[in-house]
Length: 482
Image (tube, rainbow, N blue to C red; front, side, top):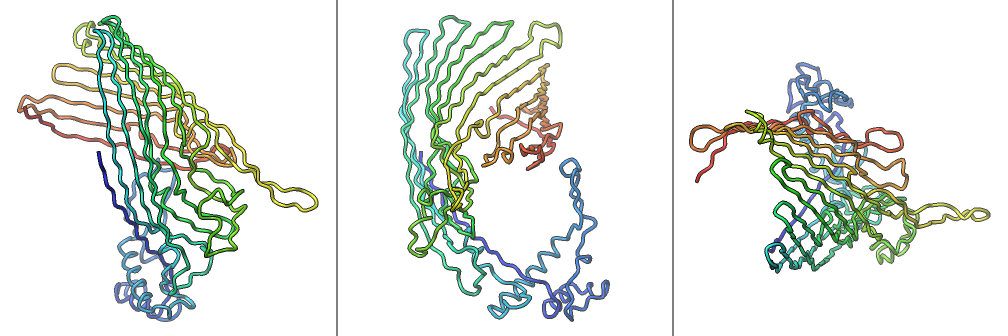
């Protein structure tokens, strides 16, 4: 397997003021009704007020269950045209337009601080064999080698808090990093069937998960007292997995499966807000030739890290699938599937405690330590239940998905950490076979109860984020060709 990705991003930013005079005249020329309906001439020194550009007919629907209101809804077409007028006028002025109430001034920091370009090369290959020992034992084993090489370029600003120097560029460093990570991933799968109605399976596997590419782009922005720093040395998350599963089957019971699992995770990637106790721990924040006096010790920083502590995750999963074929009449078409997973997880996360040395110098002190919490994005309980009915050419399946609260984001203070709230969603899938050309009509109803993804701040139970995906429905006709 080989995959090649080429990425680039160019962002442009600026700001300005809408004042009458030449800009006012140009806006009135674009919208003559401003004069006829509102008496706006575009002359003088007044500001352009918002009323003419409101759109009372704009209907955004019932957003987030109607808990939030949206006032002063603007006509976006008007706003885009006004922005074009102002930017065009400001750019033509050049540096002459930077004093007083400038119509438009490009942000020399914002125009380059988030720009990047780069490539990724991903390759992999594997060798696998299956070995049958008698009728009851089967072993499938092999190994996969996978490599990812990334090359990304970005700009670094060690003076991000200075005043916009337009039209001159803000001093910065153009930086390119190439990183390559290759791993062997061995695997063994064993299947043992001592009896026709019982099966025992075990597996040993190794897996990888790569950090988001935006986290490794070599961006650094040093402000007064804080730093934006991307970790260009982020390594992939590696997991060593052990699974054991027992399955039992008979005609009345159906299929019942029970299993346990253990994962040993190295270099787990997580976001953390902290303070810099030793700049040498952060690439590019010490011994910078262009800024020999740079000292960011004690600055606040928020970035992604590889957890130096191994994370262990274990638990069990049970699954029951059955068909009530023995019930009378149409009830014989009922099917049931119940799946329950319980997960135990514990992870140590690093943090830096800031204090002072006390009397007489009261110098700041920095103590690196850890705190223990659950693994990020891992619920303790997961339940999936579905009840279906098949009768002649018709079938319907009603399903529910439940997840308990999930630890979502780390923070220096426990009260500021966030958890995803409990989640319960209902779905329905139905289809009816048609008597023509192997056709069927289907209907999918997703998130019937309109459940939101809600994230709660631990310290006060306030909502940190509320995401609504709403209820969706799909109706269609499907055909198959043989």
